[in-house]
Length: 305
Image (cartoon, rainbow, N blue to C red; front, side, top):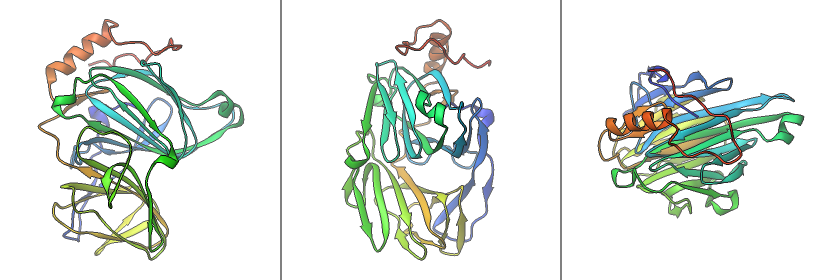
């Protein structure tokens, strides 16, 4: 997926609970025929830990004959993280990767010095119709790894740690949290968790990470005196020990980590600590220096300035 400055969400809500720093409202964004709900970056918060983009995809019904087609697009100095709740996306990239991602698995693509990828609905699902529901994140890489060799890792659902306590089910998608470590290789201290909380269930947030947020994908939760409905992101105050209580069965995505090492600039699909590096990526895209995705001939043109 891609980003432009004009698409940055700007809605925030006032809060009544000291543990909460701000609440960000999702904004709909059209990514070429497919709508996502965007939370990060926003005017209130550009990043949470190293996470610089948060898109909630669906839930959407794709009728027979239709699907998503994100044509080959380049990235630099970031990692993309894709997680599905329903449906399937076929990932292809310039390393030669060809990987369907299905519910419960993690696709982690490190762009480093430059990578190109596409995301599409498989032909068989176009015939029958399908559903799609998931979350895609971007992670800003530490300066030392911004120009690393591009890499792609797929972790199937059974490989990810699953915990349960008092009816609350937790899956550690990336990083280390709640005493468990995901096998997904990351380049900075972070955590990414899916929690399913039954009605009346409670879940304390981890305290070992400096920056933390929770996004309610489904249901309603309370944090102190604040009622948080679906499609809202809660950013927590550093050092706080918030507890979420589910008013109704809820699915919540938790994320965060250490702050990035300096300012990050973002333009279209390019994230970097250097504005000059982004300008170079623009020239490389215009002049055809990014690698190709094997078997793909389409591409997304560079946006006009």
